[in-house]
Image (tube, rainbow, N blue to C red; front, side, top):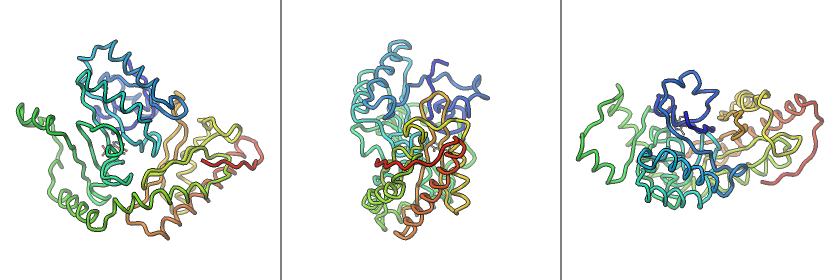
Length: 327
Ligand SMILES: Cc1ncc(COP(=O)(O)O)c(C=O)c1O
C-alpha cells in the first residue's frame, strides 16, 4: 500500500477500514483484503501547523498516481477519533478546495461524530471555508437510542446517481428501517425545539474554560481543545511537557479505567508508534446536560487526570513536579 496511515478512524467495514489509519492496531490482520487507498499525513499542530506539508504530500500523490486515479478525498473536518476537537488550519482547507476544483475530485466529510450539532453547528463543515460534496452523519442522529446514520450529498452528486444506475447494489438488513428513522426524525424535532445546537455553541466555550482551569498545572496535560461539546485533552510526557507518553504505559487505557471507576465515560485514542499521534482523551457530553452535570464531568475528569498523573510519575520513576501550563 502506498499509504502513510495515521490515527484516522472511519469504520470497520473494509472500505472504511482502508480509509482509516491505525495500521498496527486495526488494519494489519486484514491488510491484504483492503483497497489500496493513498493517505496523506495529518496536518497536526505538532507536525505540520500550517498544513503546507500535507498539501505538498497531496500534490506529490496527485502527480505520482495521476489526478484521474483520485475520485474523492475523505477526512473528518473536526477530528473526533484521531485528535479530538482539532481541525487543520484554514490554509489547508483552502488548498484542498483549490485542488479539488482543479482536478475534479470530490470532498467527503466523515461527520459521524462532529455532525448533528456536536461542535455547535449542525455540521462541522459549516465552520470551514469549503462545501463538501458528500457528508456522513451518524451517532447524534439517533441520539444514542437507535442505530441510524445517513449520507448527505450535494445536488450534482445526487443527479449523477439519479441519471445513472439509480440504485446502490449493496445494502444492509437495516437500511431504511422505519423505527430508527422515526427516532431520527424525533431527534431532529427535539434538537430544533430545544435549540440544542445553539446551547452547545453558546455553552461550549465556557465548558472549555472550565476544563482548562481544572487541569491547570497537571504535568501530563498538554493541549486542551474544544469545539462546542467536543473536547479533547492531549496527554504528554511529564519529563519534558511535550513529547508523547511512552507507548508501553498505555495511558489511554488507564484514563478510561480510572474514569470508569468514577462513573465517567470517556473515549481515548491510543498512541501510534508511527509518531503521528499520542494519547488523547475525548469528552463528549450530552447536549441536554445541565450545568451541574457538566460541572460533575469536569470535576471527575480532573480527579481522573490527577490519579493518572500520580501513576505515570510512579511508572516513570519520577517525583511530582509543579508546572503551570496554560493551554
Ligand atoms: C469518526 C468516525 N467515523 C466513522 C465511524 C464508524 O461508524 P460505524 O461504527 O457506525 O460504522 C466512527 C465510529 O466510531 C467514527 O468515530
